[in-house]
Picture 1 (cartoon, rainbow, N blue to C red):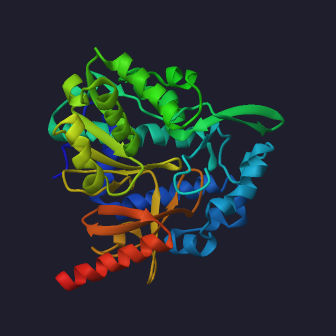
Picture 2 (cartoon, rainbow, N blue to C red):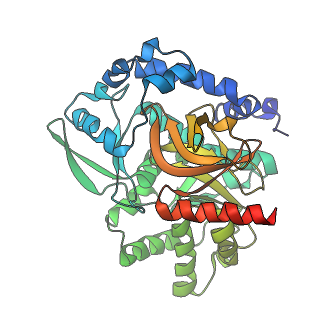
Picture 3 (cartoon, helix red, strand yellow):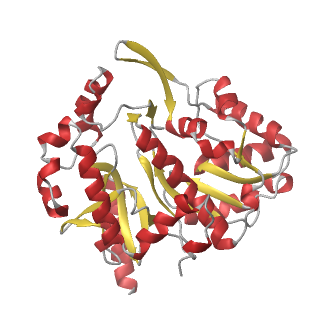
Amino acid sequence: MLPDIESVNSILKPIIGPWYESLENPQKAQEYVLYELLKKYGNTDYGNNHKALQTSGIQDYQNNFPIIDYQGLLPYFAQVKEGNYKAILPEQPDCWVMTRGSTGKSKVLPATPTHLKQIFTCGARALVHYALRKQNFDVFTGNILNLNFPSSVHVMSKDGKEETYGYSSGTYARLNPMFDRVSLIPRQEDIDVLGCGIGRSDWEKRFELAYQQALDKNVTATMGVTPVVLAFARYVQRKHGKKPADLWKVQALFCTSVRKIQFKYAPVLRKYFGQVPVVEMYTATEGVFAQQYDDLPYITPNYDAYLFEVATGKGVKMLHELKRGEWGRLIISSCMFPRYDIGDMVEAAGKNYFSIFGRRNTLTLLEHRLHRLFLGWLL
């Protein structure tokens, strides 16, 4: 049962209302997203070369626009850096951001104003939805523990000028207007002062900063990369002899960026933070694509913000069309990139529930096929 949208107050409704509405009719929501995206793509050289303004409907879109990955985008990014943002983007980027590089070399991508707005809006949904669903608004009354990566790391040459950029998680935390209303501790600017390294000693400096600033504060939530949240908890116990649960009454942990959050990480996190809800979010540098809807260990897409396709063994399908047990390679169209192969594998669990079960590589595919085969024997 979806929460009553009419009960969502005027502040929260723009954040959460469109998502609830899209879940009532995913097909209609996706058709509208495609319509809006094609108008944006029509303002780019790339879109014009693929007949964006002459494209009508998903079949036309799939015929006219090829699937493209990060390597395919690099030549267009080079043009953006030289000043021709319309080579691939509908609008001038506000900044550049980088990935953690956890599965390979770090990616560096532009971030446009519309992209940032979607990051902030969709990124707040897990928090807002949790509060509404549980009728627990304590998460808004305290501090959110900030364990993000630094936002100032490298310098690039762009349009004849030097520009500093850093990890996307830290950059989004620094720019997010939500954190002017909900206290982030420590502030991202304080984290950046400590330097840009990501070795063990660098993280221990950040963890100690977070611990000291939060020690006597009311910490109600954490939001960030799951292994970093766990590493912080272990650091606090090792260095200070106490678990986070001994120091703060955390209402929920909002966890991102790895697979098997509910099965692999949640039980361990609760040993340190207590028996708190662990809310999964599917986020990446490229967008905030989905979040956990209820207590089931799945994510539910933001159908109102992004267009989702899946390359299955039987061809390309819309994500919302997948039947329970169908799986494949996730293709995402956003306000920046059409038909972007993000490199993740997704499986449908039915009724708008999905799981991201890993990056697209030989080991993941083999593991998943064996898993499906084993489940088939059990059934």
